[in-house]
Image 1 (cartoon, rainbow, N blue to C red):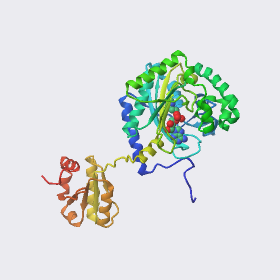
Image 2: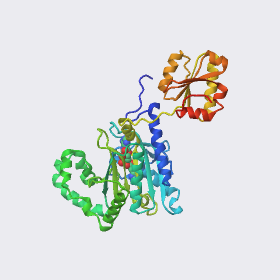
Image 3: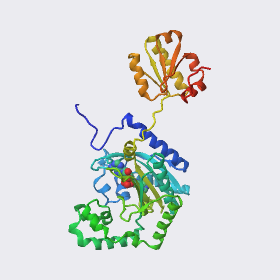
Image 4: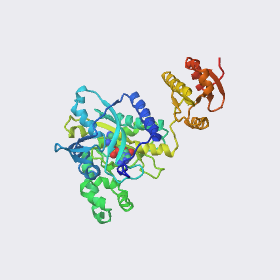
Amino acid sequence: MAGMQAPRGTRDILPTEVSYWQQIEGIARQILHQAAFQEIRTPLFEQTELFQRGIGEATDIVGKEMYTFTDRGGRSLTLRPEGTASVVRAYIEHGFQAQGGIQRLWYTGPMFRYERPQAGRYRQFHQLGVEVLGTHSPRADAEVIALGLDILKALGLGDVTLMLNSVGSREDRQRYRQALVDYLTPFRDELDPDSQTRLERNPLRILDSKDPKTQAIAQDAPQLLAYLAPASAEHFEQVQQYLTDLGITYTINPCLVRGLDYYTHTAFEFQQLDLNQEATVCGGGRYDHLVSELGGPETPAVGWAMGLERLILLLQAQQVAPEIHLDFYVVAKGDTAERQALKLAQQLRHLEFAVEQDLSGSAFGKQMKRADRSGAKLCLIIGETEATQQTVQVKALRTSEQTLISQAKLVHNRAQLQQWLNGAGLELP
Ligand code: HAM
């Protein structure tokens, strides 16, 4: 089978990139656990109806981006295009609401959307998301936004713009929708073709159009914020107040409507506008009716999801390379030396050091070059003489300082090794 390639829109995550993934997951896990979030893992596929009802029939995701198939039992299933609907399904199915209080959940994993692939946009991509279920409090909105920013900052990606909007309650939106359609209808023929179809199905999404002519028309459209009922306006005010208290700056963007239908009130995105790629690294908002629409009790909720591929592109562009952690690189040549090296590497690992042994059997010069490139701090060298004497040369790769020590002593003085690794000179006691 010649020339097989990964399917369009999917990509392999190669070992050179994996450390970025681990770094993001590690940082997010730590920050979220400190904030009392618990991890949840849901299936990669669900009944198609979950997403149809949850995300909304009129959205692009449900209308044209889902990977839907019929299984051998005749069921219609769909690879999850996002995580929120699945988390809500699990919340209802396992009776989380009966546990009372507020649930703080986070998740990460692959999502699937049949989109036109480009930099930062894939058909299989990964999200890391949080959902807080069971509270109306605008403090929850501010808390999740602050945690999202903390994660981005901890990754060195804090230089993002927080776009904030309120899409109001269902009733606010109903009133606004009519006003918007009334305004846009006279311009129908000037709108881009997608927006023309949206005029009946999902007019709010027209505000989000990337077409310059449509954007110009949308500029003067009535604004949703003017249609918020007092309680909705109050919620939005409070979110802004809390963000200000936290020292978080934001830009109110009345055109921010998001691509999923479940949102109510707060909607937000973190955008990285400098780069020529998909700019939104994290998007979310409040969804106060999704739990009840999917058959659970009325449960207000708020959350977000980050696109991990987009974060990694940013990390790579900013050359925030994750550190390679390697303590020792073991070089050996000759049968006895190689046997001793194998054993030494294992003994050092059992002392909780990170060790790579050179398995090539090539000339010392070549092995030493690899040692230099490996990122290790110390190189351990066993040649024929050392093998006979059961000793090992220890070389500090940064300074080229070198010392000879017996193999037995080497692995019996962990504290000494740690000092050497910390950069102390290689004197022997
Ligand atoms: P979303 O805006 O559809 O929201 O996706 C969230 C993030 O996933 C985007 O900001 C982007 O970084 C990433 N993303 C989306 N599609 C792709 C793609 N095709 N390729 C690469 N990255 C992509 C949601 O999914 C909501 N469930 C977020 C949420 C959670 N709202 C409330 N709770």
